[in-house]
Image (cartoon, rainbow, N blue to C red; front, side, top):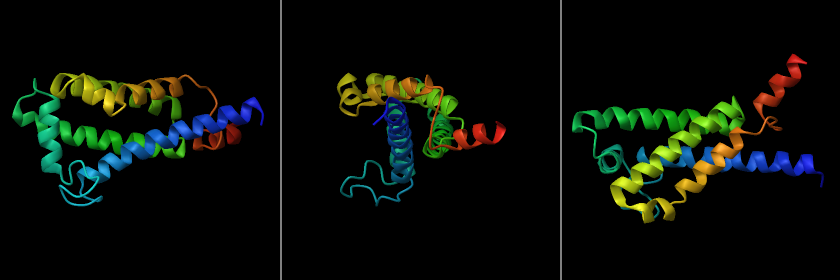
Length: 150
């Protein structure tokens, strides 16, 4: 296997791992993985996710929590889809790194450093930041656009 192939496969794996994780979290809070308290379901609905969001953002007034919930949900949906298909990969990865770092910091403040470490949020943030530094992304919409412009 060539270094180029390994590099391309690694980038694809990072894109898919981050993108699918974002979309899985969104599906959970929308109840698509099952109702609250089901096996492997973290939230099960938006109300439980909003309560968790309030825990991670103790500085936020209660009236702001629904806005945060929807901003995060839309950001995770858009970034997850962009990463999976490889659209604006470097920008999506950078934004993902920032979002995940903010989430990790919120977890640290709201529930303690151990929960952020257990959920590997710092690692996911670092992976997203690393992905944002790569210039070529094979097997992506970006690569197709680049070829069509050549």
